[in-house]
Length: 222
Image (cartoon, rainbow, N blue to C red; front, side, top):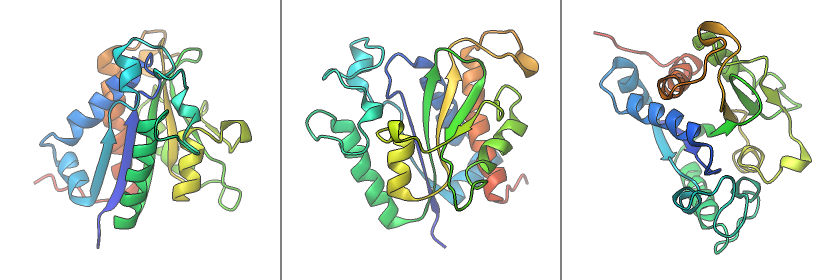
């Protein structure tokens, strides 16, 4: 059986550096020698884009690219010249889909107004619970991830975002924007504390551990 695909991206908004720390946690855990990491590599093919807006990051922008575009509103019909990374990533995803079934796409972000870490997903009328299972599992593995704050909708105003545009492309329930507060948590072991880079890296690790639980893949700890 062909391995299923997992696509993870981050830093479409240059000022959201906390998304890069979560991505570091993802990558460090995935390339580690732990039994869980080996199980993930044995069962999935990962495509990872650590920085979706490198020009914006290099030049110190907060939200836009050098063309003055919010690239997370340009996923529906990206322009090859104005939005080259979006254009290339969509082509990569289409190629990935031809190779194998894609189980999940998760785009990592930072949030400037709300506390904790949470997800935005899509509400699928035919199967309203299908997009909620993975975030619920994640909330049980990390007590500063809030399932209660997670929201699931297909708003017309957000159709240019990766979450909705990629849902139209992939037609799978597990497409998420994961938001990490610029502040900290108001729950769990980190209640009333500011997130550290270690906390954010832990969140990246927990994202992959939730994938193990969700997919039911075996972990050989011998």
